[in-house]
Amino acid sequence: AQSVAQPEDQVNVAEGNPLTVKCTYSVSGNPYLFWYVQYPNRGLQFLLKYITGDNLVKGSYGFEAEFNKSQTSFHLKKPSALVSDSALYFCAVRDRTGRRALTFGSGTRLQVQP
Amino acid sequence: NAGVTQTPKFQVLKTGQSMTLQCAQDMNHNSMYWYRQDPGMGLRLIYYSASEGTTDKGEVPNGYNVSRLNKREFSLRLESAAPSQTSVYFCASSEGGTTNEQFFGPGTRLTVL
Image 1 (cartoon, rainbow over the protein chains, first blue to last red):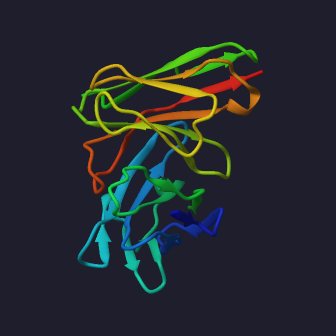
Image 2 (cartoon, helix red, strand yellow; image 1 turned 180 degrees about the vertical axis):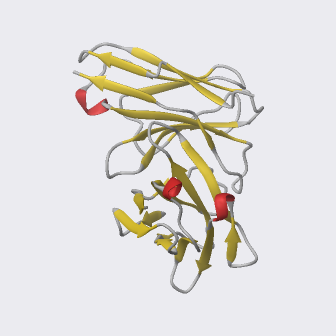
């Protein structure tokens, strides 16, 4: 069975500082990995994905994520946080067997203080 | 392009009542999904439809039924609502295939008293 862990319920960071939102996964074989963001009272929006190739993936709004196979991690990063980045962030994984369902983590609330 | 639309936005039911949540997408996607979101638990898959005419159970299908009415529409039915089904329900769609991201609707907030 596949699973995702987001060990931090909340991450607080000052505007202008770098941010990291952590994600580790468990899946048979090589994974497909995704990050989504949810703003209040909205649906989830796709940020970025890792399929294959370069371990550093760049996505929307200046976010990037680094795939680390040995540590089974896919941490979300941004060099300089904005107050408008404050939202709920979800990591998700899918295995490569052809099953289309995503497994989501429990979410991390990012709070960027001015 | 409206993307993924869901109706209603809010609903309050009494225990034992039934209702259908509607979802439609205008992106010509093959695959559609229903999730529920509960605090601290992320999103859990209820049912999905890989293509028109097919449906499969997800992680938490009990108490729900689905219909893939056509390529655009995928409805979720609660036959006899229970308080444990109080949640926010999201519909999503994707082009299909395992590498494609999913696009989400705005959600339906359901309360069962």
